[in-house]
Image (cartoon, rainbow, N blue to C red):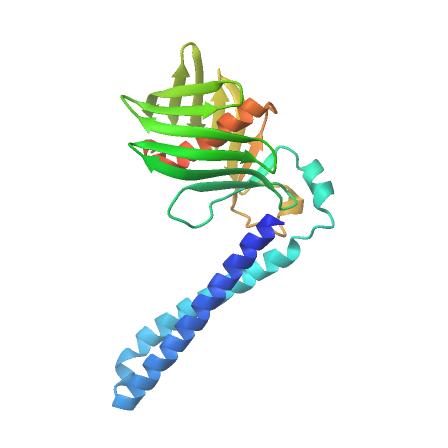
Length: 244
């Protein structure tokens, strides 16, 4: 239950931050009382306590989500929510994108493994199954290459303006667009592959996932299309400055 472990880590992180802030503030207040100047810093003390309450609330929030993720209904939810994934970005210096199904199981993982000579190397893994490699490099334009077991798929950035990025490979194209609801749409040869939206998720997810978390919904189920969408998703979150 990988997502449950992620929320457990987050809840303990906020608990540690709360304890550290509480101890630091207590020591600070005692020092001010000792030198007789505590009244001058009352507003600072109140502000710090607001931060403490915030971190404590986040701790209990993630604790509740962790408790709501149960393995008993995992297989049923995985089947009923097929094609929809919660997007998570774990903290770290390198880009990592995790896609979880409704049961909290890891469906897709994309990790940045290295950055050498203006080339970023990524590993894409589908659950515990197939593994793919992808690279993003900057030549005259940005290029995305995905290596499958028997062949390689490559697209170069042709146009990036307003709310659209268009990539091409000969006569074939793929695109990332923002619609009127600010959802992300992924296209290949003008056929919709997937949509990323916020605030819209299955009812069964709402008791255990943050309501405003991004959700990726595939509209086409071929493995090649899904790999392409995950690679484009990573490119968007790395280079979203193209969008206004």
